[in-house]
Amino acid sequence: MNRRQFLGSAAAAAVIATWPGWLRRAFAGTSPIEEEAAALAVLSEGYRRAQRAGKPLLVLVIPADGGQKYDRGRAFGEYLNHGSAEQLAPLALCEVACAEMAKLRRLAPAVGEGEPLMVLIETDRVPARVQRLDATLGEDREGDWRVVDDDPADPPPKKKETEEERWQRRYEARQRRADAAIARRIERIAALVREAVQPDLARLEERAARVRAHVQSVGSGVVTARFEQDLASGAEVSRAAVEEAPALVALAAARAQGARREALLGLLAHVVEARLRRVPPSGSRWAVSAGCGTRIEGETQQVMVACGMGHVPEKSRRFLYFFAKNDDL
Amino acid sequence: MRSRWLGLAALLAAGCNEGLIAPPPAVRTLLRDVPGSQGVPTAVGTWAYLVIPAVRIVLDVRGRLVGSRDAVNEPAPPEPGLHIEASALVGVYASHDRLLILDTSGEYTLETQEGGGLLRQEGQWAVEAGAVVLRASGEGPRRLVLASDQGALRGSDATFAPVALNTTPPVAQDSIEGELP
Image 1 (tube, each protein chain N blue to C red):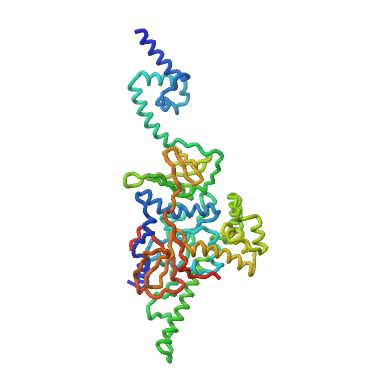
Image 2: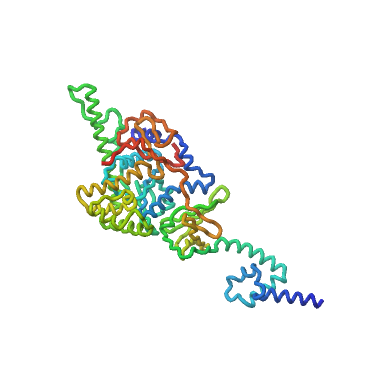
């Protein structure tokens, strides 16, 4: 078994040991119809929420392979927990859910084969426009800390340094490499979302028009006619209005500069924080692991396995815990 | 003897006169799809049904079979004045023994529980005249109307409710690590 295989297996085993109570409840169907309905409920509800809000549905794809579940969950965790306001802002324009491709294909056959990182489904028409968002994140594994002691990338020893000093220097070098690798992963995911959701001003204006129509059709009392004027003039706007019409805020941010732009992006990032950082995206759970055991947030029944998998960089510790009924680990 | 013939004649006259007694359901079912079947064919069919036991048995059996099938495919009346946007209907619906998926490509899958397995029917779906119309090859169109503001779809034989999650993830306040700038 090579190092990559071993590390992948260890990481996977660390996050999946047994089915907690909430997972059993989530798949509590007693008949084939009920089981199938439960398995598709995340996507169906996610699509409905998105459609009713005049937003697209962004699906974070859960890999079928158990080992890859951890890698993707970690990468999405890094993005959602440590992305900058500018990197997170486009997410506010979407409804987000997590699902396996096999289930996603049942609701959106146009997604095709394979396992892209994400899929963006527009909800304004049938047949729907579907975009696959994919990039390779795997080469940055060398930048993390699940490595052997004698890593050739470590700085060479100095003549007059003690073992402790050498260890400290190696520690700091690895931390820098890990942070750089995490930053690359975050930017790679953020760029995919940005390019799909708001590639240019024209697409952003389309989304804003859809949100205006939506607000008008539902007769919102939150987003008023003054909202866009307030956004343009720099006046204070309510958080509820930002949540209901994020595309209008994103459009104003795209037209603004300097501190005003930063402030508007901050408003959108706070929407993402409330919807995806405090609570997990639908179809997943937040979990924390520092290398010995995994704690699933909000659950009393914990998964505690695979101590000794090594140090986990601080920005990788909180990750999306993906689950599937037929995990075979 | 004469009174018996008079009684039979009166019965036949009544049976053949749609103004007095409508033709039996089994006869109506038989002649419903035949163009120009009003008048003489209806009268003859009614007469044969009433007088010949074998005809009555055959038409009754046929009527029950066809009638039950038509009851499934018979469109339910749409809600008056209801405008439905197709994209708002995409999703997964379930009745007690069936699962209906209206997908984003305009295709549908209807799975029916049969013993321990599922029977699958596939086709196209569209919104027409205020209702969802399912079309599969070899099958008549099936209409489903929006039953309520909860998003249920009602057919003549089943009501499909949108599927919903039965668990809600708790909010975890104690482990939020990242801080927004």
